Amino acid sequence: MDNVLFMALLATLFTWFVTMLGAMTVIFFKSVNNKIMNIMLGFASGVMIAASFWSLLQPAIEKAEKILDTPAYIVATFGFLSGAVFMWASDKTVSYTRQRLKKDTDETKEKRISRIFMLILSITLHNIPEGLAVGVAFGALNTTNYSNEALLGAISIAVGIALQNFPEGAAVSLPLRREGYSRKKSFFLGQASGMVEPVAGVLGACLVVYMETFLPFALSFAAGAMILVAVHELIPECQKNKQTAPYFSTAGIVGGFAVMMLLDVMLG
Image (cartoon, rainbow, N blue to C red; front, side):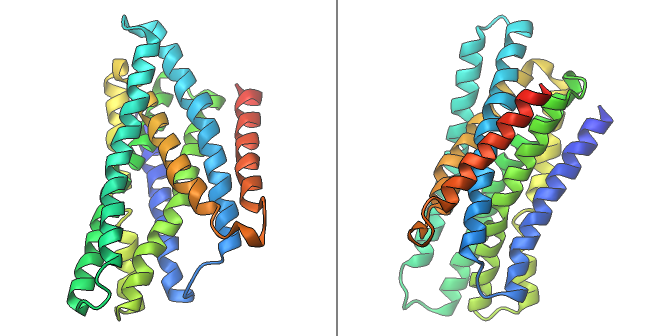
């Protein structure tokens, strides 16, 4: 059990670390290479879509059939929709704040800074369900005896979340730099948005470890959250400016799905 919690902590520390890397772009660059970012986000979305079924939904259904009286399809569907709705609510908070940031271009610097800090807060809240999803995936290892399939699925979810955290870190630090903040302070505030993920990750793992009957719902919840992130955020983002390189980001999506499917089926 302790090993599972420690692994969840390490995984979410990794997702936080990638947020730090994204925030670090403010030190070295004024912008990020779009082609590299597109294929990374595409690959991450493909991995997350595949992992959502083979590493989360399928085990959730199998576990629900064994330990719960409620039909497995009800538990899986309710958990999946709950995860998607929860992530949608956090995403709406981020979207609303970003829209506020774009309005009133003639406003004072103090108001712009205030709205940037609102963005930091909203992205921080947005990271909580992502940390929970990673923690749940690793917490599930406590009941699957560290099978290769389950471990691979948990790692893939952590990697997928980490890759999409990279632009979020940059999305905070770069605007702060443009408003006159020092590179050091812009970096610090950018990476701070990911600090909640290790806390949420350990919490998610604890819920699964100490409440086994919660596991099917938690796995389905994580799957719903992952699908929404992949479809609503990663895929549209990686498809931007695709005219210069048609199918470039799409190849990343297909490749990520194929790699995850191959590994899950081969090791499962």
